[in-house]
Each structure stands twice: as C-alpha cells, then as structure tokens.
Image 1 (cartoon, rainbow, N blue to C red):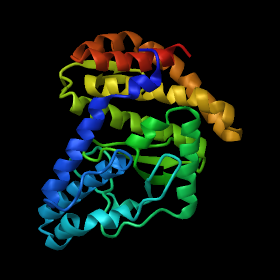
Image 2 (image 1 turned 30 degrees about the horizontal axis):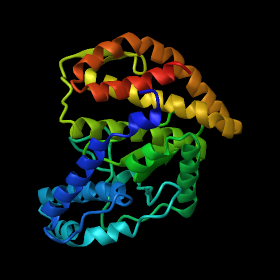
Image 3 (image 1 turned 90 degrees about the vertical axis):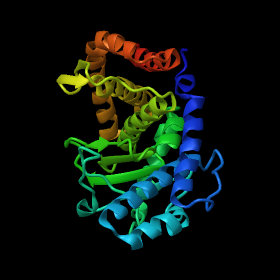
Image 4 (image 1 turned 90 degrees about the horizontal axis):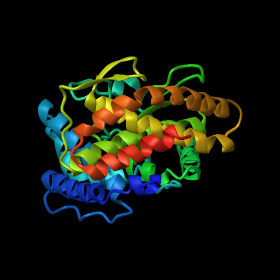
Length: 303
C-alpha cells in the first residue's frame, strides 16, 4: 500500500461511526432521529457524542433541565450551528476559558457543545474555511472532512509561541487547537488532531486495545511514552510532515517559514523514532492497520 489516500480509507471506520451514531442517538432519545447519510455522518457522529457527554455531565449534576435539552432539543439546535465549508458542514466555536470543562476524562480542559453555545465570529469561521482550502490542496481533505467536524479554536497565539492542540476519545471528530490567525498553519494542526481521531476510530472499529505496559522513547516529548501515545505520535506527526511539504509551495511569509521549520524538525524526530516504531507496531494485531500506519510513516520518512 503506497498511496496515502488508500491508507486512510478504512471501511471499518465508516461502519463503526454509523453504528456508534445510531446507538448513541437511540440511547438519548429512542426513535427520534433517523440515521444520517454518508455526507452528513461526520457532523452527526460528532454531535451525537457531544450530546452524550453533555447529558452525562448534566445527569451527574442532577440538572434535569439540561439533561432533557440534550435528549430532546439538542439535535436540531446544534445542527443549526454548522456552516458550510470547503470540506462540508462544520461547526467552528471559540469558547472562553471559564467555559472549558476540567475533569478526569482529559489532561487538558475541553468543551462540550450545549444550549449556550454560539458560533465563532465570522472572521474565525473564514479562517477555518481557508485552512480547509490549504488542506484540500495537500490531498488530506478526506481525513479532515471526516475527523474534524467540530473545530474548537481555544486561543490566539503569536507566531513565536507554542501552539496547543488536542483531541479526546470521548468527543470524536472534534479538534481543539490554538491558532495564530494564519490559515496554512491552522491547517497543519487540524491535520494533526484529525489524525489522532482517525487512529482512535480505527482502533475502536477493529476492537484493538494497545497494551499499556510497554513504553517507547518519544523524540517529540524527549521521554518514555506508553505505546498508545507513541504510536499516535508516529501517525499524526508524519501526516503533518506530509501536509507541511505539500502546503509550503502555496504558503507565503511567516506561514511558509513555520511550515519549513516544521519539516526540518520532523525529519530527525521521525528518524529517531524509526526503530521503536517498528517494534511498537508488533502490538497491533491487525495486519491491515499495521500496513496503513507503516505506509504513512515511511512516506513521511522518504520526503
């Protein structure tokens, strides 16, 4: 398997997402929602999990009003937050720091769509759409279209500051990321977090659990990491390397410099991870998934 598009095209993920969406909607409000078509599936999948997470949080607080909202009203209300984009319907939001949830499910505060959620300012929606345009030009659009249906822009940073981005398993197809106001740079970080969501879905779809008693040295963190986190890095960073190389010719000014720096940083880090990556792949029992991860890693190494 030499083609990145083919490596990222895993039918089991689509089946898993469709079944998981239907099961979640049936749990929240039996009989009220029809299964989404393929084009609407990424956003429906994301929204179903936001509703489930919001309902669970409300139930724990014994907040019956909010619980009922997530069960009965949230579907159409949240769908109205979506804007069209180059990669299909997408929700772009910019919650305040005090609206973020701090809990046991994520190392970093995260946000759940709710009755008080509002869309991001138009300028930020345009920024996200422009980022989608850069992603489309790198031929990684199918990845981001499917796995970044909800984009949460957490903070604006200066170009010289470290950007924080993350995804959590409880909110698939949702990405959280800082931004610099530059669409080409944002595109890189959307690819990175969409890659994490892809791998989470692939592992769930194929019923694979990565053992947590094996660790490997991560050149990106400079420390030993559990196999799960190490393999995630060995999938997400190669894809950002591919993005940087493909997007750089269309970028200008500071964005071109950032993408060039990213490319230069990734080369030695991928080289340093090569041997441990090969060993860690033995923990994945599915040969098809191993081949897909290896294709992405080796294509980036060859750049």
